[in-house]
Image 1 (cartoon, rainbow, N blue to C red):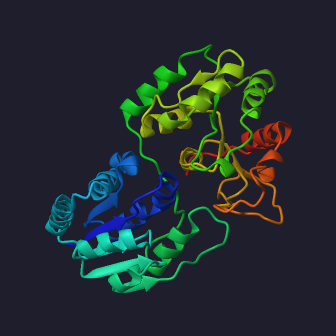
Image 2: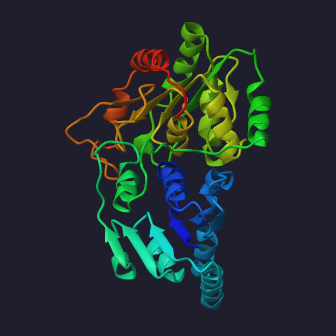
Image 3: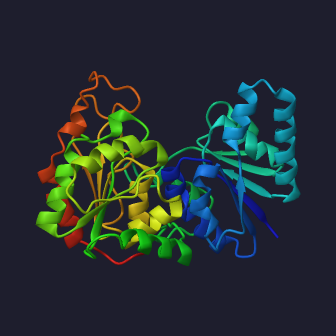
Length: 348
């Protein structure tokens, strides 16, 4: 019997985009032991997926703290402990879907005799037995993983992303969403890792107000614990009735809130990509990054104003003006939201 390890360690959005590999591998290898190695912050996305036999954790943060403290003997013990854990599974195939040195090293530590790297960089190709160059349809969400699946001969019809949720997740979401006047709600996801990916903070309250008055939707705001200060500023200026759930849910509870929402509006953040996976009509605001423009769903629409410097990714040249995001207006978002709602389709 095959024992297969998929390695995609982070980030949340990338794990969501790689999630179709699970169903494709399960269809190709129905009796295999199928495991996924991931960092702790994204593990919840996979833990409830019944097609996975096991979710294994790479505690990157713990290893980094030990390294920075100079406790090298302890770090070596941790590396060897993970190596023993991986090799206990006797993996026959390890698929490095991240293609970096850290993920390649983990594939090598697994001892799998067949190690397949997607677009291996940073020298990780030397640790693979097979390399698959990155490819696929430019601009399609998750295109590189679809390309990987095709190169591996896996079934790829549909190839939908999936975030598996539990009944407990939905119950928790119902309690959070129940705080208010009972109207349907729109989720907003204003926060992400880099300032050049943010939309104009002062416009979120106006958007929330107009979602209420023009579309009859309450607003529910999601984000992580580190976003609390910005969330409080937005909530202070928003109309009464905004539900501030920022930092007050775990990842799957946030997913359940997105699944229950009438609409999602978000920047380039993992929660925004989850909206597509959970079949919630979505409007995605992109500027310094353009991870995709083809969402594969007519009710998920990307707003993006290309400039000569676009996309700048991690190297903005505008001196903090972030014009690409400023050019997205409240009026444009509302018009696009109506378009997404009108095009709403059933979950895949």
